[in-house]
Image (cartoon, rainbow over all chains, first blue to last red; front, side, top):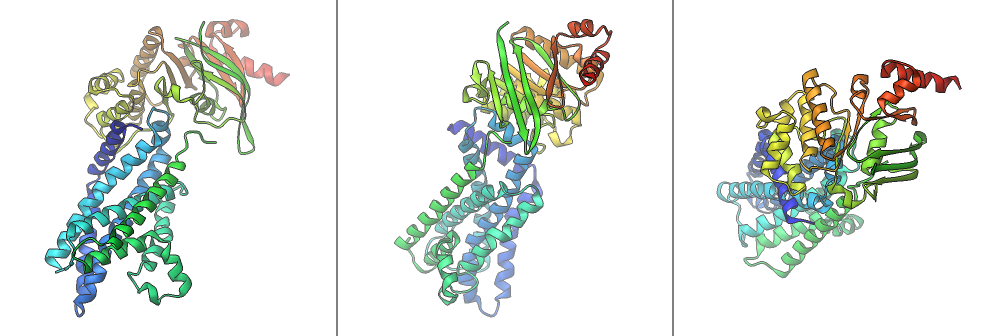
Length: 245
Length: 238
């Protein structure tokens, strides 16, 4: 592996993103706008927004980085640029870390803006500091992009890649405790949600909401999310083959 | 002649369909070898096998002394695919600069690779806004940047105007004179005449492996198109 190649890959991906102004606008603005929407949907019960809005700050980077990465990676696979890169001295982990670095940066920008809107305009109030929210959002972004990278291996077209979002991402959103408390789900669903990484991300955000300092539970949750992200990145790397039939 | 590519009884299948059958040939260092054959004859598959991105069923390929696909070869080999594999949402310069970084080459080398394919004036333009022929040249520049010892070019001159095609061929010969080995596929016969050696494949089999002059002489024909027709008819007559 080489840091230089990882950085130049990340730089190349960010440069591609810069040329796509509309995608940047959508990635950056849509989560903030959806939070505004959510806040006024719950206008009569603002205290519910305090927990749901906070959880959404973790869910957005997960969803959008899954989508962006699965389509970007599919393009690399179908246009031949991935195969070409793999005939050069670059290591596949350089490529994957380049992707992780570039899109995590994009996710941090996204969550800084969404958090700013949530805290200053929508009166989100957490006992813990906002920077922890950003850290959890960044970990979720890595998780989302790692799963997107992996999913792109099973799609032949962009249509298929996008359809993996409801298949892989939405069940985690439904089961993570955001829509309905996990202890009130059917037993078997609660058990499934115990092994889904997004559950721990939402739990970590709950900890930030109710504790002024980072708790042991929060670090433990964060470690689980990061561990799953690394595992998904390794799975994703296994789908980058130098030699194909 | 030192051997750059040595292929022995190569068999490749895609699914159940045989794509290459018993291909055996050698390509010498510092030569321009033309790989000719109709579309679907197995040219691209043979090139992919030499580059080491194609799974093979049987046979042996040695490239610059190492088995095809060996990691030692990644620095020494350049491959340009038929459809340009470059990033349409980056400028010409950004594309070349990215591939340069993978070979530890710098900005000056990137600019000279762009100049070699005649795209200096377009280097700030987005590749997505260029013509098909220009995109193919960007793809070529991304391979030239590595100063590879072996260049595998899959139909590099398709869609280029005659002047540019001539420039590119002169450049290929300059590279060969400096010691680079080039394997160039084409389906245009006037390009075949510009190669030092020709490999003709048809339906997955190597049907001719000789110099253009020897092929013309052996078949008693004046041009290569006729020579190839002669060879194919003879094979089918058997």
